[in-house]
Length: 141
Image (cartoon, rainbow, N blue to C red):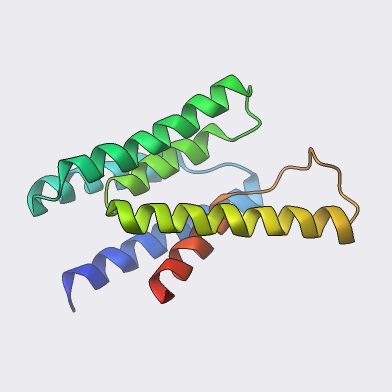
């Protein structure tokens, strides 16, 4: 099995488990995020990946954490930490493709829930399943 396939399988498993937790408990596992981020940092060091990619991607997750603080939790802080952890193992191109697709999918789902299910604009929607969908979509594109 090629090393990129192993990395993809690990990312899919990580997002799958956290998606399930996010849907069920409306939270993410910080322990899993810490283990994944640590592994991602080791992966980056051992594979001698571009440091700029690492800083840009992980920094984007830090921006999401900042948005969570500013909005007083309207955006989940765990989502920001999870995005930061994903940034440790992904190239900038695939990271931003995943993030863009995730945001589009979540916006479409929010529209569907508001129109067809008559939900209000403040209804909480778990974001990690959309990160999984965005990652899988990025693989297929």
